[in-house]
Length: 134
Image 1 (cartoon, rainbow, N blue to C red):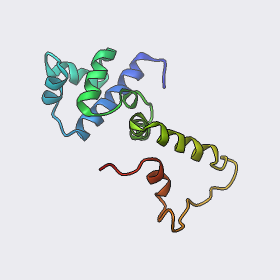
Image 2: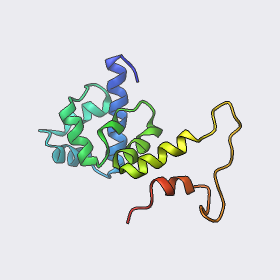
Image 3: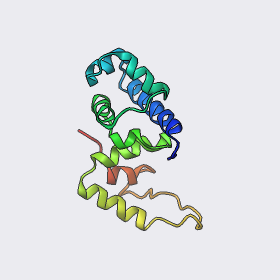
């Protein structure tokens, strides 16, 4: 993350726009649901022209059904991971901690994920930590 408020506003603006589009909302719909007086404020946030205050960031996160922390990450690829972690229960977080603790170091060659009968396929680690909703 950056210390420059202009860069920070652009990063958060990009995350807000991505979250709104993922939620399939127009700027006007999102602004209304978040309690903004007009959609122009949200446009300014998304353009990175204005840094949204925390209470507005939290309101927009609720509207988009994402974690407020997911809107603050510098790397867009981390947003869904943060959202999953934010919704995880203690057992899932413990399982993830165990997986990461026993993961090979960056210096060691990467091993293929488990593919035995108990896991089924290469996304098994994800399913064990974050079982499908339903």
